[in-house]
Length: 221
Image (tube, rainbow, N blue to C red; front, side, top):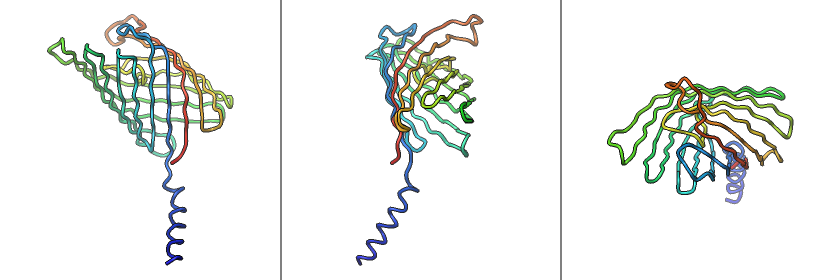
């Protein structure tokens, strides 16, 4: 009996590395200014595990929102990201959107490139309006990162920023500076601007901007 127990325990220990999956916890605080909100302080927390991610963001009592995503990876470079997002601004109402984005990521010694393309469907609602507003938007993303270990600099363009998701996808341009502390812990600073309506308005206008400080911890369980 003792030998059987030892054999079962040994087999379990051998399975642990195979069954282990990576997780990531990210926390951010920052200043976010938009044309619709007067309270600028914002914060978020995001948990990622085995392809799933859950994000909650709050801006005082001015706005609360959540995002649930799943990344169906193919090989080492391809991602298929399915995402659902909802936001509420009391007592004005809110919006929700669902999206799919195909993304590919390439990494060389000192540079990485990521692009993405997809589609988003959203709806906005308010207790002061009888109609629900619908939208279908293209979603595009492009970013490049320069690595100077342990630091990195990322220039990015995205139409689905986690702090700036709307009932229709709008362009966001930003710059991120990161510092890898020990391979598991990363600190970063981020600044961005957000465009207003671009499909109907021929003049590019800024509808928001923000700066963020964040910390990421990565591990395996």
